[in-house]
Length: 102
Image: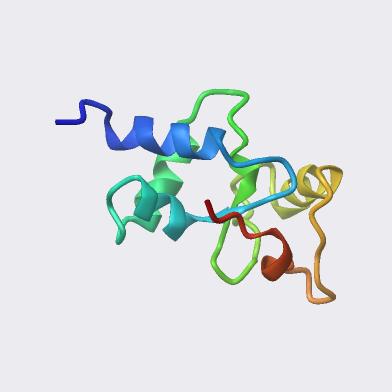
């Protein structure tokens, strides 16, 4: 049996997202073994260690995280843009181009 906790799996998965790519909270939950726990992924990322690229996890619509996360959407957007992530005119991420699937 896998002794890795859900939190540890979330951190491992997020650490593997390449720069310039994003995953959704739901994808991370699925790969962490709890497909219906997207909200729990958000809680896990809130407690994540410094240096984990949590900014690469976004809503399935391509919208950025809420105001209270990453210093707000502007900070998250700046981090993603530095990695080459493109945004559509409405401010959402171009998910067809940047969604990471392994």
